[in-house]
Image (cartoon, rainbow over all chains, first blue to last red; front, side, top):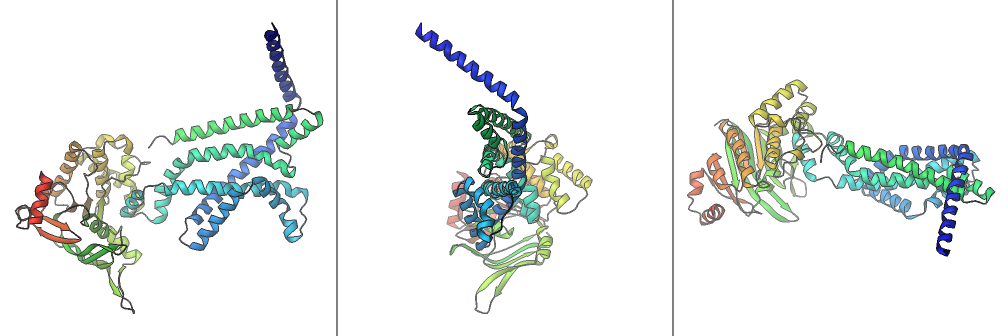
Length: 238
Length: 258
């Protein structure tokens, strides 16, 4: 009797929560959607710049010149070894503390992009490096015997195979990036998490953040779907 | 027998101060089939890798068709080392030979056809159509006509090795090197690859073959070289080698045939 009443109460509560979450999502959809656009911008711009930059750093990491190799190694170590949140703050306040230059609030968004790009490039660099180093030496030797130049060998033989090999770890990193964009709230960039937090504070409710969670989850479902299709596209050879 | 295609004089090679090739001299004439036999660690593969310039030699001379690829130079301090021809010369020299690897090293992301025509097209600038015609001819010759659009992972080891032979032949080399071409294959697949090499021998393709297949070496070779401890211990016609008075050679061949 008692258990049954508790259960039905619980069911009602859950129903209420879902209803209020749904009604909230309808009411505040425009605001959240606006923030979501900023989130997507951070996501796209970060990928766009950090992926190629990571390739350059990976080359540095594998360079024959010791100084370049060491510099790349230190860079990767610092970027992976300190919090992204701190890196955002350093990029944002750095110009002031280092040179006394006061950047306006218009610098907030670029600062977030710079911080994300230099951070993610370090992770991508290590993914690329492991992919390149996992290539059997026989592929290079066959190319050399057949007369391919060094750049032909890299672009025609090595890189396409590396691309396939690094897809799973790149997927991981990309999914992490979707969630990491929420760290832009550190310097009050109006992306989705920042907005959800503001609304939540005004209404003393956790629902706005839950709604944001739903957005992040759907975003990542799409990311996972796209990456899976890419992996399938490359499964024509082994 | 025609002109000298390959000449190796006093080739030396060591790894970390340990000598692998002590002093190898060898010349191969056009149309000749030379097999290199010997126990593991005798330096056979290193010889092939130095001859194909996958490894740099420490001393000696390497000459293809009269053109020097590598030679010795002594610096002011009296240290001798090998210097190689310029990049431009090297491109010419490298065209004279091909190499078939023990584990094929096909490009997995290319179809059989693309594996065969890509180097002719993008390295030698052969028109695509001509390269394809050449490839079809090779595929027919090697019994792989129906595999042109397959990817390497869809083929048996024997088929893969035949594709890699076709890939090497597509560049029309003067000499073809084989580095233990059947060591990664089971006996049945070994037979089909050896058959292809025998046919090439009939067409007077110049070949240098590192192998552990004694009967095959006996049938296909004009000359057999027995190597041990980085030196050519004995060489001669198959009859001479298989009836050698050298106890070590007799012992080795006996064990391999057992």
